Length: 376
Image 1: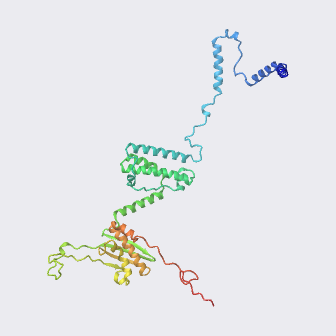
Image 2: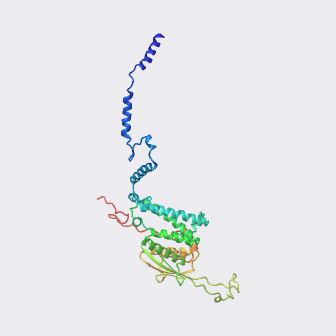
C-alpha cells in the first residue's frame, strides 16, 4: 500500500516540476498575427480618448461622411450589372420549347377553370363520346422543330401533341356549349401548331364525311358501288323498283280458286331486273351457283325484287365476277337501307375476299404440283 501511494505522489509532483511554457513568446506571436491579418479600416486615424473631448461634432461628421463616400464608391454600378434573362429557360438549349410547354400548361389550367365555372367539367363518359370527332392537323416532328426553333426528340414531340390534344378537346366542349370567347381563345393558340398539309387533309376528311352524311344516292335515287374478287372488278348501280299505284289494281272476279275471294284485290308481286353487261343474269351466268352468289345479299336481308340491278364487270372468270358483283350488291343494299348493315357484316358479305390464285413456282408444274419423278 505504501509503495502504491508513493508512486502516485511522485506522479503528482512531476506535473508541477515540468518546465513552464514561455507565455511572453505566445503573447507576442498572437499580437503579430492579429496585426497582420486584420488591417486597419481605410480613412481611419487613431484619436486618443482624451482628444475626443476637444474635437467638435463637425470634424467627426466629416470623417464619417468621407468613410461613407469611399464605401459607396466601391459598390458596383447599376449599369455594369448583368441583365435579367427574359425567361427561366433562357440558359437551356431549347428555351423556346420549355417556354411553349409552360404557356400550353397555363392555357390548359385557365381553360379548365373557365369550363368548371360554367359546369362543363368534368363530363360523364357518354357526354365525351357524344362530342364531335377530333380533326387534328398538327405539324409533324420536323415541322414542329422548325416552329420551336430547336431539334425535338420523339418524347418531346409527343409531350407537345398531348397538350394540344387536351386543348382541342376543351375547344370542342366549348363549341358544343356555345362558349364562343373560350373557343376563339383556344383556337388562336392551337392554330400556330398546325401545318398546311395537315389542314388540307383535314378539309378532305370533312368533305368526305359531309358527303357520307348526305347519303350515297344521287338525285335519281341510284346507288353506285364497286366490288372486287380475284382479278374481277364490278361496278353496280341499284335503283328502287317503282311501286305501282293503288288505282291500277282491279278486283279479281269469277275466280275458280276456293281460297280467293271475289272482291279481293291481289296486287302482282314486285318484279326487278338484274342485268350484267346488258345481259340478263340467267343468260350471263349459266351455273346456278354463280347466280345464287349474286342474289344472296338480297335474299339474306329480304330485299329480293325491291331493286333493279345494273352491273358492268370486267376481268376474271365466272366465279370471280359473281363474287365481285355480290360484294357490290351488298354495299348497295347498305346504301339504300342502312339498317341491314349488321346482318350483312355478320354474314361477311361486306368484306372483300382476299384469296387469290397462287403463282406458279419455278421447277413445278403449277403453284404446288410437281412433275412426275422418274428414276431413269
